[in-house]
Image (cartoon, rainbow, N blue to C red; front, side, top):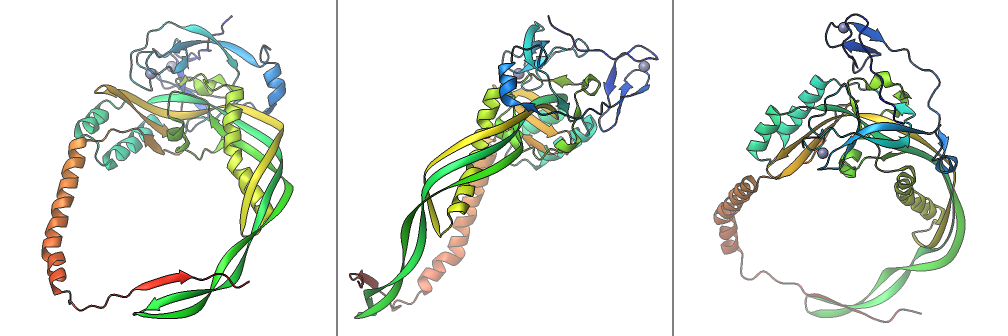
Length: 385
Ligand SMILES: [Zn+2]
Ligand SMILES: [Zn+2]
């Protein structure tokens, strides 16, 4: 059984209310009436990972919603009869409105929109203007067709306490004198130099760390790296999930599930644990031969974060731009104009040739022919032992 998203009709005229970014109210697009959202103060609970995985069939954690899918980029959004799905917000492809049921874990929290569509458009235009080597046609096209869509994008956050047992080696530098034969200006002499060597010593030990709120992007519709560039997010301002904050916006369904999200989080923890081990080993250099990590007390939250998204097809490809709807930070994919790069490179080459013509050649001519050339040949002799 699918539950449809609530609609919030205006008490004055019956038109749809939409959440007004940066505020605590919804506003009627028709008559301007404002409706205050009563904030739920229950806080955002973190849930135990394993019990959630066990109860994945449980109706308490799971809800069924209606979703529509883009057949070009595979993004899945919550079907909302109030928002007429026409184009995919990520890639600009026309969406056929064949909704289907989608079983998923309920979002616990939402970080409401703060940046308005106008502010996001300004940030996006500024960003476009600064783009180097973008085809002029694209810039023009993007400026004209910049329809930014407000999207809530799914994320997981994980907390976890790790305990790692490791086996490795500690390397300590020491210096030994070494005799070397050196030829300077044609004469051989013997010199003593100090050479740094390293002594390795077997070590083993344990390290532990508590990871808090590792944020994992749970959508496949945007490149993961592009989304990561939009960080940081002020997660401390997230509020318990309430549909009022979603009214007027689209929300995307997660495609990275709870377990896959944790696997990515583990990859994120790995370098931190590794540097903890190195610090624990100490010395001048470290080798880690084996490390076994236990992940305990895993808690997670499912959050929705606000994005302004523009996606459009240009030529044969689709391009995406995203704006962090809390900070106004912009990221995007961009094509390069081959011609612009070619002419810039050509101009640069001409400049180099001209400069060489003026300065380089004259300097080569002026170089005195009798400049001495030093030979510094080093032969290493056996160590003092
Ligand atoms: Zn109204
Ligand atoms: Zn799409």
